[in-house]
Image (cartoon, rainbow, N blue to C red; front, side, top):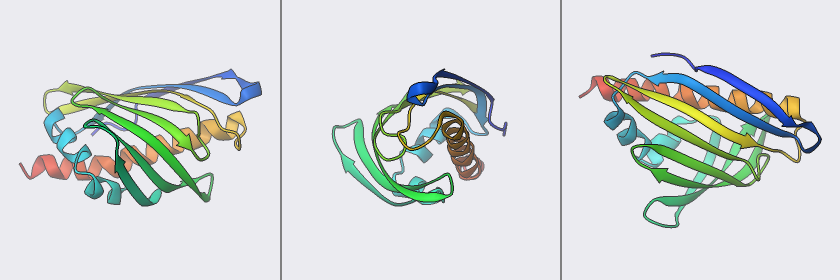
Length: 161
């Protein structure tokens, strides 16, 4: 398993607290079909993430849903809501509707690499409650934590095949 890739963040508009993110080069130690099986298992995948709690899914269409939960951000639990669109096997697009990242948008792009799966993340983040420097740290922390929490179960699922 390769750790998080190179994180290239550039603050685009400090006055509005916006941060653009390009995180490329991470890999899961499993083929893409295993990664998607894990990602689309719903509540089992949700339970792995200790940085969120009390998650609720609400279907919107065959490929999108809303997800509301509490997320630990900058040391405090905060309510959030997202609209998530799954474009299997290529990408997952997320729009933050409520919470500390409301108005932010990001996309995870998955790339088959034989026995591994590449994952790149691109996003434009904003926050009414976090200054740009704190927002940047919170984004990095969120992505690093989610990657670490997913990597183990994905590798175990691949090994069990």
